[in-house]
Length: 477
Image (cartoon, rainbow, N blue to C red; front, side, top):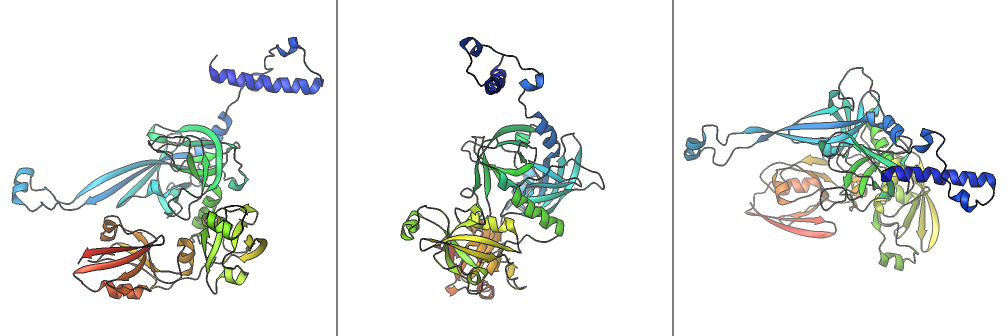
């Protein structure tokens, strides 16, 4: 008998002994304690996840992505010496195919799939193909994707066929210690299933984006599992496996999944054709440090402290004050600004939430209306291109919603994204960088940045603010 069989039998015998003891209401004799009663049926002796896997696994797919990337000219393309030895085609533009593999989960019988943005994001022309567990393959297209949360929604392009789908569970019902299964395609070996427990809820410290909140699990997650399913013991989807904590690239029992409640928000947005909007708070939140907790007479180092408040924002109208510490959103405890924004996002625009706040050591309840941020104008966002340091950057005036999302002040210009391979990318600009000045000219609005990059100085002098630090850059013109 192998170790697994020993554990299963011991488990059944322990339960049987408990049941017998409860019925007899008497202590067993030494002879009775040594008896080993066989299980009455084969089913009673088995402990298996097979019924759960049969329910959930058909909805988990492999996602194959092929990107056609155009390679640029070689700097030696026109050199007669190199063309003589390597041929007339040496150094000319060419296409290179990049391939990647991940997982996805069908959440609707008409072929809607949830996966990670980093699984399907490619450069250039991209083709996506999904393979079901029964070996059928179909083309798919991206309906929507969000880099901040790493959520992408796909749709199988195959007419009226119906597909096996998995039902979403309310991830807020999970508790630490609950059993879960991770289903995906690690290392491209084919569909695999691993088991574990929930180690933590709403982890916020490990994401690259302020919008990322995770379920932590010790179910083995490896490269290729990204976009796969994390399911509970009812076979329902509680999360999308996204990343691991590892120093070697293999699973060390610390994996992270995007909660199903956040996935549901993006599915509803994709179904309605509307962009997902996070409710506007109108306040800058800061994590509570030990020093802040001591200064505010808090008994725990947790929560989100209210800093700057917009004059006409929802927070000001609801009665929040600078120095308030938010410790709960409705019935859910929050540990930092990310967890506050997560709760607001999953609640959605419309209605209200009850904020439990500590104010000068005393509890206060604030009813916050959940409203959408004011829309920006047509000149508030722009893609920049040209012979200047911001070539390839997408920039925006700092609008109310962005100020909340990125934890910024209300005035200025912020970088939203940077195109790979552009001048801005090579210089190291990042999402969230606030442009302070260019060539000594203070930048408070996009129009001022436009004027500044029209100049052609011998040396570009640029200042950006990143995470509270001002960085200076000098670039030859």
